Length: 316
Length: 289
Image (tube, rainbow over all chains, first blue to last red; front, top):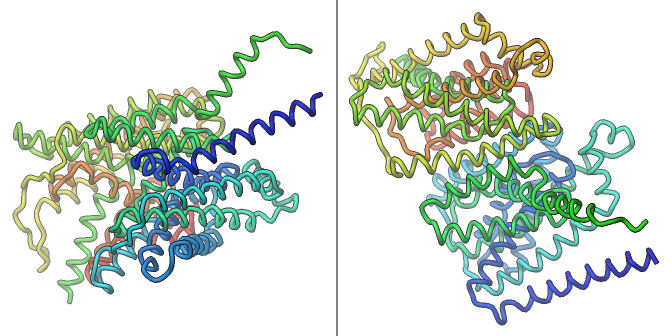
């Protein structure tokens, strides 16, 4: 009886997800062009946020490096976009970020707490300035032109990356790796003593999360047509995923997805309605969300759910 | 040759004075109040714009503005901590959680302060001239306002150090830095002291802004670059060490001046290089334990 209920609940969730996927996959056929562009933007932030949360969620290491990995993908696309076909460029962009993350992770993951955060923040700035110096003095230019790809193609690639990422995130959560990450977040020394190869686990997960950011960067770069180090390595791309993940709530896999989707839509809505006050309103919402919603939207919903279900008389 | 060296060293010290002031404020906010205040530079920008407004509208001497801009930023900082950050501190499960969340909250504050400034003053570059006669030091020529800036930075740093070392409130702040819980048990009103600390951090940034506005043109979006510099200096001097930050400011000023003498485009990259190497080799900073 109980097993039957669990089974039907699971198949219900699975069916719902499948329906959602079909809706998303067919949406370019019937929805207006603006919706497709908006959805690709939402996917971009969702992918960055979820891949950020894969590493930082369970371990508690707040990484401000997403902009570095995202930017590495963007530059891969700008350099190789004319030579290779798009799927190859996306793969290479992801791999470039993966390698960068392996290097950075091996160097820095022995730093703990706020030092790690500060380091990753400095990394983005260093990459940006070195690249700018290289472009200006050696190459004699400031930015690069990126080959344009039509919106529907961008949308489908983002959808694919999104689905692969969600599967990866789900599998990591369910695997031994996920447990190891969880134990690192709770007590790192204890985790090391129980036989978890702490450094290895951290570096690998960090690199996996970077792969998706890089792949996203190399596909989204095609929408901007022109990029320079200031666009590619904008620290906003480091802070946004963190804020979106916290806004959504990190206790559940769908928290970062919901947070990123709502935030991106909100940004779009505010830009069109209040072009002059948009950043101000955005800042106020950020502060309120962080101070007054410690568990995020998912936590809030969970609390409300518990309150309503507690009122019902229990059967047992 | 000697003139060149003199030029580089004095230019470095002049910039270093302002860096030191901003970094001391940042260090106070992180070291005691445990807030990695990403909006620190915005308080500096506020100080600079208030000074500019008082100078161009009412003709108030920028040095007198220290007594206007400083208290304004102090009060803003104090109130922000009392309302938002105290709530966050009490509701956070652990210090690590608070550090992360307060950093993100201050990132939101960055947007708020910067955009209020843009709404009030517009997005254009502003500036005024004050004490711009040149002074000759052994062959190296500098504007008088920059030398005044250095003098004031040193005096403010010294006064603040004496305040921390000699007064009752200073003692309470140092106690709160070492162990907030124990300081609370010893009768220190911990919420009040932490808020005052945060306010003093903002005050230092405000002072830095006043001095900056005397020498350079100002813009509402200029804050973040100084926040980044404050972070670098504070890591250089050791997170939470106030004398370390003060000295670190001058070290960074000198480094910047030396690098920009050879390759001006690389000076910012050199800052980050120094910062990253330092974090890898000696994360506790040059004066760290």
